[in-house]
Image (tube, rainbow, N blue to C red):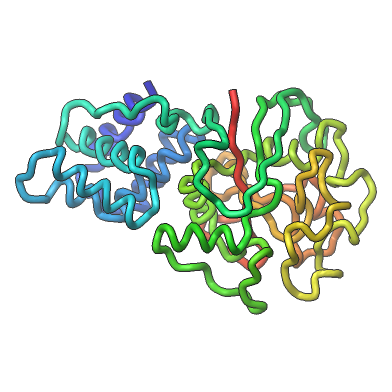
Length: 332
C-alpha cells in the first residue's frame, strides 16, 4: 500500500532528523523529494503543507485531547487555509500522527477518493474535478508518439488535458475558495481570459490539487502539443510567428487563451506554443533542483524556443510574467 510506504518514509525521516523536522518545511520538502523522487508529487505537496501550517507541531504539543478530536481540528485548518479536500487533509494529519507516534495505524482513505496513490498512476474523471469555471478538457488517446528532438518512440496511457492554460478567472476562483492572495499583478493588469502569470511551480501544483487534477509530465505535455507525427510545432513543421503569441505580436503582454485557433495542436489544444511557459511535473535533470517548463512565451521571439520538444528550466519557487500552467486528468 502506498500510504504504508509513505508512512515508513516519514518515520525514517523523523528517526534520522528528529522532531526538529516538523518546524523546517524546506528541509522536510527536500528529504521527502529525495526519498520519493517523482513518485508521490501530490502527496508530498500535501504533507509539506501540513508542516508549513504548523499542523505537525501542534499535533505534538497540543493539550491532552482525544486523537480523533485533535486530528479533526488540524485537518480543518488544512482545509481552510490551503483549500485541500477533506479526505486528503485528514489523511495528511493521520500520516504525520502515525510517523510521530501519536497513533499506531493510520486510517486508510476510502479508495474511491483515489488520492493516496502514486501521482503517475492517478485514476480520476471529470466528475471529480472541482467546479472550475469555463473549464474545457481534451482527450488524448493512449498509444505511441515521437518524443524529444531525437523523436524517441514512447508509449503513454490515455489522459485528458485542459484545452487552454489556466486563466486569470479560474485562478481567482481558486484563490477566493482557499483565501490565498492573487499573484503579483503584471504591468498590464489582470484580464479575465488571459493565462494566469507570476505563479511558481508550487502555486501551480496547489491549484491542481484543489481542482482534483495534477500537472502534466513533460511527456504528457509534449504528446498533447505535437500529436504522434513528430512535428516541430503544434501546427506543423514550419515556423509561423502568426500562429502563436510571441514577442513580435504580443503588444507587450499575454493574450486571450483562445485567440489563435490556427496555432492549436493536432488534438486542438491551444497555446502549446507561446503566450506562457507552462510548468510541468517533471524535474529538469537528476539533480532535482529545477522543474521543466514547456512551450515558450510572449516574451520570446526565437523560433527554436517554441518547438514542442524544447525544454526550459526554472526553480520551483520562480515566478514570472511569462509563466503559467495547465492541468491534466489521467485515466486507466
